[in-house]
Image (cartoon, rainbow, N blue to C red; front, side):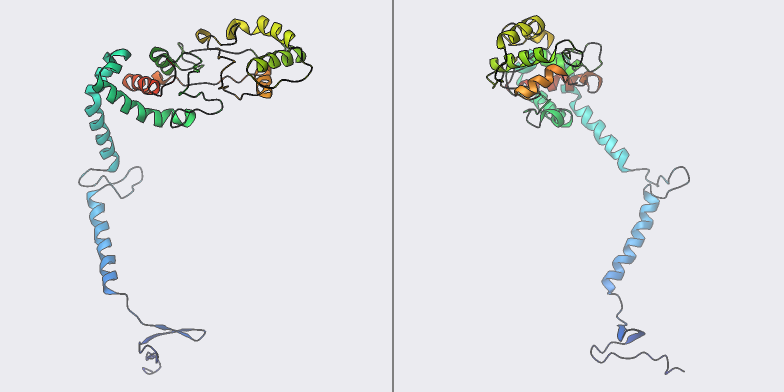
Length: 292
């Protein structure tokens, strides 16, 4: 009976087999390497130690807090609080100082630019681009075409309260939907769009009465965009002569905007960020070189 269960020795390797065979393939009885076993046992010991020292074992409505009562969430909060405390002295100075004073104080300016760059990357870059270059529907912050003004104070006000954000002090400038709301007829929309395109250096359609388009413009658009089409920042009406059209610079885009305009929304950052960060953002955005 013992001979029936005697393990066979593999002739090629000289290793004893386990007695298991599948389709002529015999399993060799090779033990696991000792170093691997020692590491495996060590991980078991480490798991038991971790279970005792740190939060780990799930309970019905909570978890074991561990002997040390420490976890990564508490460590992260402590690190954050330490960072806030470290920058609080500069942050208080930023809040107390005027924008002009910050620009003149090299130490405050350096802090504001660093703080503003971090805040811009987290909050503004998804729309305006990492360098403030903008995209369709999101204005560039590097040029001189600023709908609401590009001075330090103007940028700061826009950042604080936003544009059509719902904040009580938000900047609000709505362009009428001349086509959707039937304020102008189809021919009038074509005439005024071609007139604007002609003044912006774009191709126009043949046979369109540009003089009639000018009359339509003066009666309906000049109050906001100005008689010279250069825009009026006080009401948030952009220049129609600039190289940067927010929603595309073409005759088709102009017609679409006249018929059913898109009116973008910018958040009121005073409701989301601390005062020092908002002011730092204003300094950082102004440093792009656009505006005034």
